[in-house]
Image 1: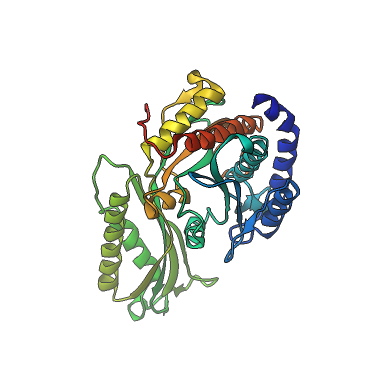
Image 2: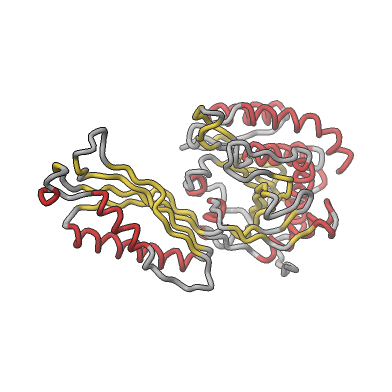
Length: 382
């Protein structure tokens, strides 16, 4: 396998360079989908586009068991060197490269395994809704295992080390509208000051208490009110609240707390507040047998000395919808230590591309080991 990987290395770097140079934001990954579709078709695969969205999947082999590998394909929209544009600052270009590399490596091996390996190129992870759209396509339902991968920053995994599970937290994004009434700055009693309403919400968010043993975060991340004139009290405002928790049940408690805060502010200020959920990502629920298989794949590809304990991270990842919505599918995510600095979602994020080759080897071994297991379970060591 290592010989084949060495031959593939230049091709993988070309693929990464292309994907990195042409990022596309969530739900608009049209050319990305076309590029992957055409590349895989030229390699002799039969990729299938999703019926209702961007993205695609491809099967290698046939029959059962069935093992899946999922990658995300979208980029972020952010300011880079003074210009807002699509940018692969979360590493999805690397994730796609590893998924394609796994397919190219499996192409040389497909006569040596029994079963089906399905590689899924999922849109809109950054919106937290791409996995839900893929679930609607039905391509997850008959899988026994599903693996994912994510590059990790140096403060979580040092360069050249790997973990067999990523315990992302739950995250929820709420958007709200305060609908009050403008007033002259000299006559505040004639209107409703949306800024004061927002201040009440911010203060009361601090009164939401949950289990202190479970990390949580709740804060207002955006507030917009008023216009050019400083002598007008703005009655209307829009805001965003970001909520995070390491466990799904605690996320539910936080959401109930936010509802109480909003209802209280409505009564106190006699104002209408509309609140809606725009993103809802669940916390990781890792399967022990999937983690065990990933551990063995890491040991075989990179050595026991480079295996690390699972990483617990407050970031969100919509991959975990698959485990929650389809609990019979055994899931885990590979954490790839690749010297990533200064951090995920930073406009200048960089990592060592050479580690993608090791990632391909680990993922290929993981899907093959999962096929060999036939769905039998073993406990992970960490």
